[in-house]
Amino acid sequence: MTGKFLIDTNILVYAYDRSEIEKQKKAADILDMLIENDAGVLSIQTLSEFFIVATKKIPAPLTIDEAYASITNYIRSWQIIDINSFIVLEAIRGVKAHNLSYWDSMIWAAARMNQIATVLSEDFSDNSVVEGVKFINPFKQKVIFD
Image 1 (cartoon, rainbow, N blue to C red):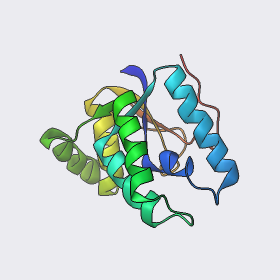
Image 2 (image 1 turned 30 degrees about the vertical axis):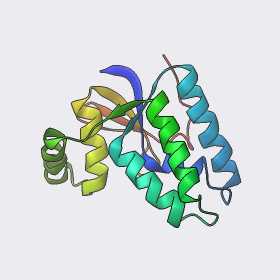
Image 3 (image 1 turned 120 degrees about the vertical axis):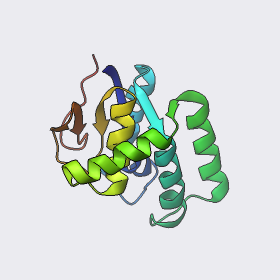
């Protein structure tokens, strides 16, 4: 497994959510540290979910143009994982074997199938490990870069 971190949608969204001041700062700091350490990875799923949540579900939503610009920047500067048929099948296995929701299982499967040891998310149990993939809630603990 690599020293990279797969970023879940909630981390990206908090970086833009002005209604969550503390989490916004923490998320922005995490994203900056990931850039500095060349350690951040995003999936197509995360970018797609980010667009919907950031333009429709946060109290002060981004415009479509603002979201487009942010996503374009991420695509140009971050490693992006495409979702393919193998990840879909692995996600289904994760639902069955580990009782994950399908969308959470897609995040897990994308990390596992791309040998990314750690997912940063607040949606999983902090410090839980599923088949070698560790989940860290960066709002509860400091993220350590190797």
